[in-house]
Length: 562
Image (tube, rainbow, N blue to C red; front, side, top):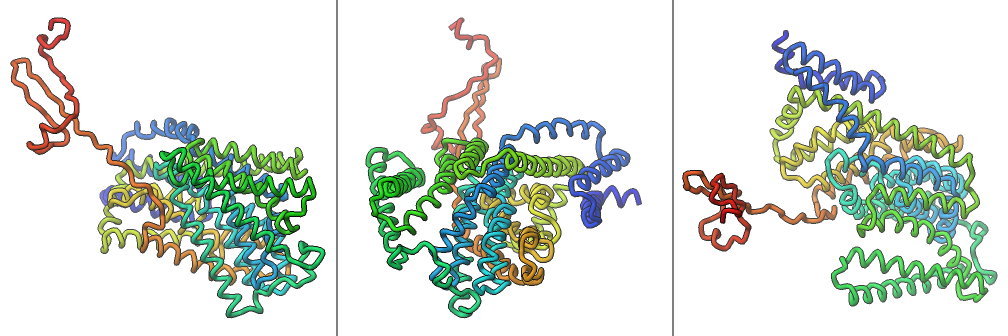
């Protein structure tokens, strides 16, 4: 029996963790207790040395000092402040009025606002609860199908998990040892594509089932002009002018600073165009110029603050001005200013946001500490080698590995949330992916899209619970579950597309920094031998301009004596 345990302690340890988790014991304590128990068993069986557990304090202090993880409380605080600042309410009302005359207009508005809130808050709970409180009653009042309305709101809220600044991407970058900024850049296109797929689903419903997604009636449209005009024409002209100014700014930047990267020039020129539109709208309101319609003016004043916040957070990260942690700090300060400008800032609001931020941060830290205890012992008993052998021996090579890993994450997402998946499984599969030659930034974004489904899975999806907590009584729990299923299918399709078309995830090609170092070792007897790392061809040796590093023990080489 003892020999069997020694030979199979890694799978036994992993199986015991599954039993712990299924028993309902808190995840952080399950991980830590499992790790400590099997650490003692390994010491008793002679597999581990007691000194191994002495590494735990240093690991825990390393977690506490991680700058990447410091971004989590910043972005959480920012999202909670914005949730109560009135920004979501203004956005949903304005964009709903803009798309109101179109079938499915309110659903389009929810998706658009969900993406915008995702790019500003990064918190699923804030997005789902805000849209559930504001949009769901409106959608039900004007004849939307309960399942479609529930599914659109829950799915749009989960966009906060993949569109930067996402907490999932911060955790994934930390666990995979990658840059948070690189992870944000890589996830941007998949996030926008997923938003477009949600919009396409609503468009298909408006064509084939128009009675499920009706347009707003005339009496519900309150941003029209006194003469009855919708004001959309004025808005389109202003948008065209904004785009023209942005292109002109991009051309000026390209001519004056040709060394500037294209994405950085795009960010700067877009900021110039948006500020020009805001200046025009402000002058139109203060000077009563009458150049813009009510719709155009309202859209500018409602959209520019969150767009400015997005530039403050993501723009500064993408152009390299700020780190993700610094961007999160600026975003938190920007959220406080927005709440102050909207007249919503109060001590009660700050206290509530700080309490919620502290709880979530402690939750993350305790899970991470527990996973560190588990990972230390699991690697000590060669569990990482067992997982590596298990996954690398799968048929199909890289594709087989990706298929099995994504199915495993998808199934476990029924029972575990994304923090638990990220802290337990990602450290196990990440090294295997690296050994198979998979780019870890691409792999992290792929798993991030997959883990996004953990918020939508019936019956344990957190987004469904958030929506249930604010949904009216006439919306049944079964309606929320059935409404979520089509969007879960869309997310699975998105995972398949990323695997089939890897270039959807924009991973910058890293420059090969491998150096040719020639070490010349002179023996005391005068017989010199050269060692080249890595070995170079004989015909390339003469052309190599790498400086030689002389490690000679001969006193004759002393420069003073020369």
